[in-house]
Image 1 (cartoon, rainbow, N blue to C red):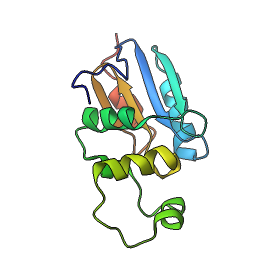
Image 2 (image 1 turned 90 degrees about the vertical axis):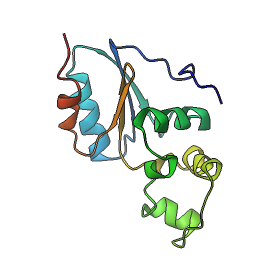
Image 3 (image 1 turned 60 degrees about the horizontal axis):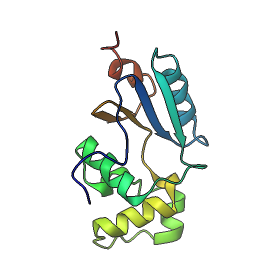
Length: 132
């Protein structure tokens, strides 16, 4: 995998939001993001396939292990993979994310070289406070 951020283009005037439109948190986060002065590129995980390479880059931007982006208690995860977690490799976690994007824990907001997981939609405002 490349060390550069070539797959997910980063631009300070643009916000990328990776979210699930089937959740209230995802839709509320999108509304907060759209209240920004910046252009919003919304990536609805139900409709847009995010590649393993892109997920790996997002985890790196967030400074988190890939497995921390997955809600292992989500019904889709439990139904597909069971409750007894094996020590999955990063590649295994990436396959889970590619095949079951609904198990992503929270919306992910990217602006420039910064990224944050949004646990409460109003946190979007704090993340974007430094707007011009």
